[in-house]
Image (cartoon, rainbow, N blue to C red; front, side, top):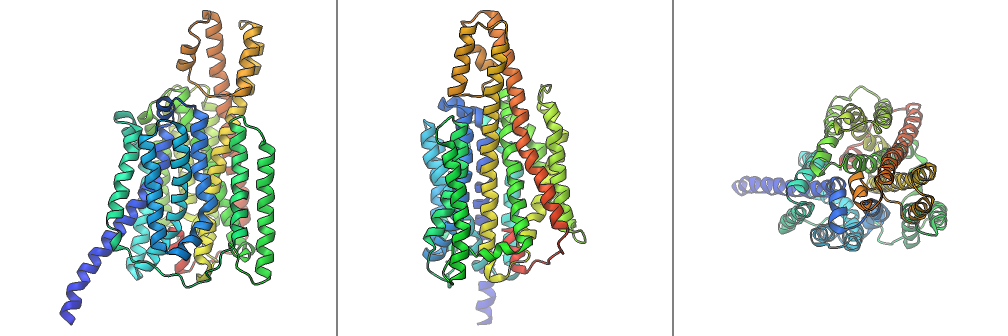
Length: 532
């Protein structure tokens, strides 16, 4: 018997290692996906004959779907099996990636990548955490959490470079095809995963689930509709805000009556958790706003290809990765709240330095120092925020709290993407119209035509593309319009960068309130959930 145990132990250890690597591979795909889309904006616009704002909206929609459904998807995994939810999540994500490989129109990408892929992400994240918790114990569990966390960090760091290389020398479609291949490998070894039974309450708070989707969806969809020049913007945002208010009242009443709730409202009584998820949201608004404005600056104004864009953004992603690792290892003895405040201060400073550079920069290398500063700030935030938010949570509610924390971050990302994109287009339209009307060179009939076109559908276009569209115009008029496009685009990018800048400043205020609270030592479960 002893010999059998001795022989089986190495096999079990090898199986655990393989499973850890497969889970890490799934997380790598999950994170690198958005980086690939960001650096490929101009290539996608060109290949699908669409617009920059439409691709922006699609990216924001994917983050929104993930945020809106993550709390519900966690419950789906509890009720129908975590392993099943994990497999469905992988299949949905693979469907989205395959659609990117084959799509001939943006509509297919919206349906399959943004919506179905976003639903897949919402299923994957909570299921993966539960499966790690149930398939590993002790040191092996900690190592797996660390490996999955490292895969996410590496994907965030190298994603722009990897996506830029593949898009430039092969095609953006090849990058998404590689995601499908990785997911197929992961699914081929699904037998290594044992399901983790759920022993908690099996009832579902359907009303709470619906209100959460309508609330988050209404707010961000309203902004996306505004960005695309649609109608009923105020109505959509008002419906979303009203639904979020109704959700808060519903949860409190259900909890008071002892009934099942989508999430425990008592979580928000804890000041560390409340300030922590607020900071998580603000950090992701900062990141989302920056990751809309900066790729547009590089790909539209400087007319960079995907690889040049990835190289230009590398100082941000690589610094964020390096600082997050170093701060996680060397932060003992330092107050997490002070590190968080320093993170928001540095990210705000880095973005503030970029704004005056935009009009005069003719190379992405002008952004290097500001991006290093902003990346250092974001790295400090990544190293501390999850631990801070989840530190006061007991073991029974840690999974629920981690889901709220993830939803807060995903909602912040989608909000930052949508608002920065909407502000950029609104500023572009207003500035272009005013500059055109003030031009002594452009005839009044053309001024009216341009104003009407921008009112109906404002779009960001490079000077090269605009020059082709104006080929039949007199040279003086063509030169004037191209000059106006340059000035209006510069102004629009500067105003759009105020969105992440403002989020960073609010983060400084939020983290200053954190400093007034005593530090809380996180439990082992909280540390594991934060890393996941």
